[in-house]
Image (cartoon, rainbow, N blue to C red):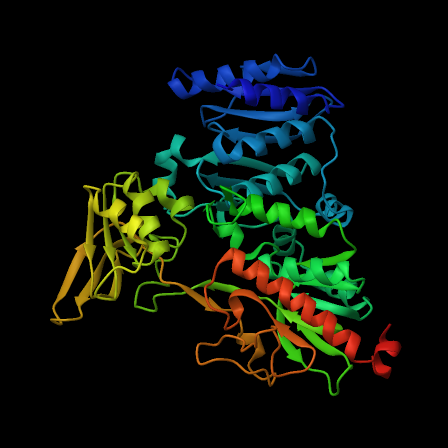
Length: 529
């Protein structure tokens, strides 16, 4: 099951085991059970602290649990093979079960240990889902830390009957005690916030106690990370308040246009940015959602950013880099059938539509790339573009047009997504030239129509916004408010690209430096410090 490189890598990692672990499998006569047996035998052969048994009892076969030999009450179960994007999750589960300490904030671990109640998690993933590992690893950690928490992590392709019965049409899909808990990516802190009712109050108290920053970056994507690195290198006290560090990178798979990096993937790049930021004295505050901006009353004074949990942060200079999010189609049925056939991530959810009919809405690069990838998995793809021509790069259009199971509709306006109450069963598209409407029967709709800037929280701040809701910035990243800069996809900067956002963030950081050295702090900075 493991190639030479994976075997060598795993053998090296297993040297970090501190205690014996057991792998207990429940198998049948299927080929996948055979592959599971082969994998577990290979793992056990790499370290004498790993033992394997094949007398496990579970209705899901193949499946296996990982547990510490000295504490059988703490365990995690994988149903199906955790390969692909989940191989790292398997490695971490082995290490954590074997006593290797996780690189997780001590406060979060204390929160996990202190949870009261019994929590039985079931989580479905696909091997091509780049958002799933964060959820898998968070649940693994919780189950191995608290004996009242169990986690069964299920590869949906191995158990299609369950996926069908539970109506799962998007991953990651997490269930708690038999009921739907959340659809989508979650990190450990987010899960705990949902389980621990006092989590928001604790976080707010911790944030409210912080001194004012010289530079506070709102947003943790490529622009925000670059800005913080630049200001920290200049010696300014710098903080990053981000709803999700990494931003849209977590929703991006292949990246092939970052100069100097022939290929990488969004989550990997997000991790590398986090590592780079971590080399400096930058205070990173994750799960911190900005809800209101109160600008300083005078130059050199303190700007205030109010957060969703009730806390406030203050800074002499702000860099707003809150990015953008997927644009909704805004037609009847879209919201009703979200995660029931309406999807936004082809890499995550595409495998759930194997052999089925789907539509992709959007003829730009994102839409055409999604259609190409999906055409390799699904039965048929209908690409619908509002304009009278596709807007994607010529090389992508040529690739799409060469595929035999794709229909391209231009001048097409999607007016409705329909369903049977449980899942999507079609859509209605109107020909913008003739006005004629056509209903297309299908099982999934992937929406790829661009981005919306995350600026709703700035509505009453006095900050100038464009007609499209973007922060208006000049050539140096300055806004109409002194000491407040903008960077990246949230601004009017053209071309929403990772490399552009990084450069824009760096420029905003340098502009913040220029502002701070030219403007003396007023009295309130000393009082707040």
